[in-house]
Amino acid sequence: MQFLKILFWCLLAFVAAVFTISNWNAVQIQLWGGLIADVNLPLLLFVTFLIGFVPTMLYNHAIRWRLRQRLSTCERELLELRTPRPEPVAFVPVETPVASPMTTVTAPVTPAAVPPGDVR
Image 1 (cartoon, rainbow, N blue to C red):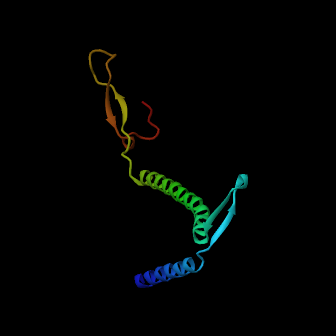
Image 2 (image 1 turned 30 degrees about the vertical axis):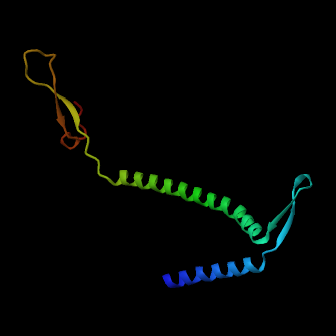
Image 3 (image 1 turned 180 degrees about the vertical axis):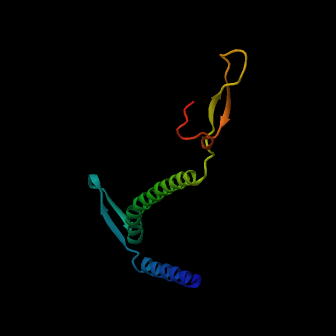
């Protein structure tokens, strides 16, 4: 397959070289203010090709960059959603038999240890 790619590009370069050699004519371009520029036809065609190709290529690269950024953001968010999160620990105040009635101690209790209707 690589051989076919190289062959294609060599043939394209050969056709471009033959076109350039056979059309090496000066073309007059009328500019503003009565100026006339003599430009070779292959150079004129190359410049017009670049005028059409470069903005399109820049637009395509900008779109691809934007889509890559959006894809990486979505992949990051998906990874965050798929990672398991640790179960939150609820602190429930537990009264201890101490001489002072105002003293309370909190101990970590998992939500599964507290019955659903139990309010403390």
